[in-house]
Image (cartoon, rainbow, N blue to C red; front, side, top):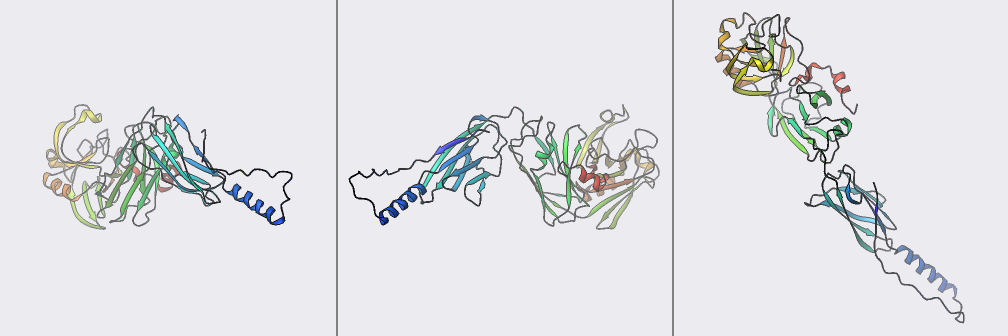
Length: 396
């Protein structure tokens, strides 16, 4: 980046030289001249340097201010809307750097107040503009703000465009918890094919944990995917310690709360031996969607079904739900005869729907399934061993 030098004006008083016929200066006069010269040197103008400078400079860097011949009393950097890039003066008083980066398409005014050794204060001002972003990268994040979630809910960010500088992005993401929960970010591919990063605890959340995500992405270059032009913040609370145990061999589902079984209900899972089998492993309740239309063509099962389904609870992006399935009533607790979902009676579905919340884990087991839920297929992070999960961070 180039630099701009701003010279602080000061008034210097020049003494005329003595004539040859004048009397010589005595020792006390010489000392006075030396002191006067010293005072003049201490009161020379402070020289301020600000980077970046000019119009259309590249965004994404910190604003830096240095001074020679004095110290920085204060520095203020504001954009055209009055938003400030805060920073700190170094211990020696000669340097300042903003904590945040300059964002694309903005105009900044830098105001630096300096003080010389003689105590003279002056103000220097510099202005620069940043080039607009040629491409903007946006974020879809979960969970939403001010929600209460289950103990398996990850923090999940999916990006509109590819993130090629993953380390730069991950450094801007901070998760804070009320009890120091151990956890890690990991990069993965979302079911949609887009780049995604999730933060999950090493183990299920403790009920009552308060969680804050601060994604200070504004001004961050994601690489080929473009710039971020805003920050993202979400706060949520972890609710009751609920786990849903699904045993497809026994065709039953048990809701456990705080380690104790609340109720066991008969279910019917995916039909064995083909594409209609259910997934196994840990799936996380993504959303309670109520009454929705389910069409088999959207999940690659041709014209197997097309019907309105009540009490629908989404478990994966690929279309596995828990829901009411009265048409399979004769199979509950006896046979797995669904198209991959976990079906139950209307009455049991109504009760169960009211008990669970997004973020509750469904721990599914069964001999004849089509595999373990992938990390990006919903919230399948819990099927990845902890060591491998941490190794998927760009900052490992």
